[in-house]
Length: 340
Length: 256
Image 1 (tube, chains in turn yellow, brown):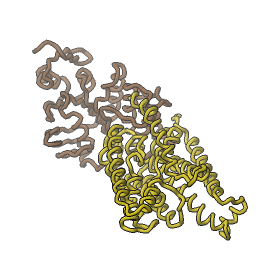
Image 2 (cartoon, chains in turn blue, purple):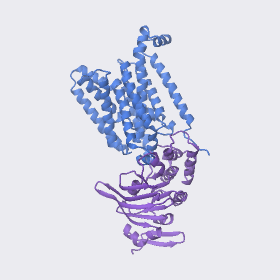
Image 3 (cartoon, chains in turn cyan, green):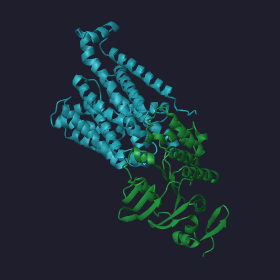
Image 4 (cartoon, chains in turn brown, purple):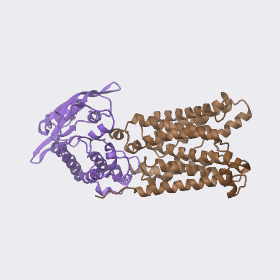
C-alpha cells in the first residue's frame, strides 16, 4: 500500500544538507572578512598555528565572533520555531513581545546598577531571568488561545512594559558613558565576542536547545489544538514548561553576551516552513540551521556596509525582520484566517 | 465486565454545576448517542470521560481507573472535538497520521501497520480524495472528514465524538455515521453527541439524554425518543413518525 509522504523524507534531508553547507560557507566568509586584510594562507596559518598578528586576529577576534553568530543564530531560529509551534502562531517571535528587551534589561541592571562584570555569570543569569519573565507572562496571558489578537495584545503590553522599564533605567543612568553603553547594549552586536561570552551563550543554547528538541514531537500533536494534543498523549504542562525554559535560556543567554537581537526567530522558521510540510516538529532543525546562516550573513553584512561606525547586527535584523513580520501578518496569515 | 463505567461523574466550574452525578455503564460494540439541548453538558460529559477536564466521581475503563494523560490512555480513547482545529496548513494525510502518535509514530516514514491504519481511516471517512491537499484549502465539511479520519486512525476501543457530522451534508453524514457504526461492529464503544434526532434514532443502539447536567433518560432509541420526553427535554414540540428504517423525528410540529 502506498502512502504518500509529504514532503518526502529525501527533500527534508536535502534541505538540512544544503543549510549545513551554506552555514559552513558563511562561517568561512566570516573568518575571512574584517578590517585587517588577510590572504587565504595567512588565515589558515592564523587559525592552525595561532602565531603572530594573523593568529591574534583569527583566534581572539574572528573565530569567537563567527562561532557566537552561528550558535546565537541557530539558537534563536530554533527558539522561534518552538515558540511558534507551542502557540500555534507563525508570528510568535520573542522580539515581538519584548523578550530580548527584557533580557537586556536584566543584563543592564546587573551591569550598571549592581556593578557586575561583562561576560559574568550574574549578567547571564539576569538576562535569562528577564527573558523567562517576559515569556511566562506571555504564555500565562495568551498561551491557551490560538487567537492572533490575544497574542498581539499580550505582546504589546509586555513589550511596552519592557520598554518603559528600559527607559526608566536610561533615565536613572549615573553618567553619559553608562547611558551610551546601555543604548549600545540594546542594539545587539558580536563585536566584542570573546571566549567567556561564547562559553556562557554556548552553555545556555546547548541546554535550551536540548529542552526544545525534547519537546519537539509534542508540537506536532499541538497542530490540532491543546485538547486533541492531550487526547493524543501530550503532557501539556511539561511541554509548556520545557519550551518556555528552553526559549528563555536561549534568548537570555544570547542577549547576555551580544545584546538584544530580534527577528531571527521569525524569519528563519518562515523561510523553511513550507519545505518541512508545515510540520512544526520537523521544522526545528532546519529552522535552527537557517537561523545560523541568517545571523552569520547579517554579521558579515554589518562588516561590509560602509558606515562611520560598524552597524549593529541587532539593528540590521530588526530592519529585515519587521517587514517580514508585516508581510506574514497582512498576506499569508489573513488568507489562512479567511479560509477558516 | 463493562468496557466503560462512569460513576457519579460531576463537573463544577465557577460555582456552576455543568455535569451532575452522571452514572452509566457501557459495553464494547455499543453505539451510544448523547442528546440534549444546548448547554446541557453533553460536551462536558465527553471531555470528562476522555479525562480532559477535572471531574469528581470515577471513570473506569475495563475495570481499572482512567490512566493519567499519556500514550496508554491515548491509545484507548480517541477524542473528536466539536470543531476540529488545524493550526498549520499540513497535508490531509499528514494530519491523519497524527492519530498514530499514541502508537509511537514520531514523524518519520509510517510503519506498515501505521500506514494501513491511516489508509483505512481515510477510506472510511471518505477523505482519501484529499490526500496531497493542504487542510486550509478544504471546505468546512471536508475538514470535518479529515478530522474524523484522524480520530479513526487512533484505532481506539473507545471513540468519543462531539457532533461529528454537524458540518457534513446528508450524504457524508450517512458515510461518517456508517464509519463509526463499522468501528462499533468491530468491537469499539462509540459515544457520539448528536443534534439530529432522526440520525440518533436510526444510528444508535442506545440514547443518553442530558438536561442541566443530569442524565434524565438512558435506553434504546424507541424508549427514550418519545414525544413527551423530547418536549420536556427541549421545551419544543416534535412529531415522531415510525418508519421501517427507524423513527423519523421532526421538530417544530403542532403543540402537543
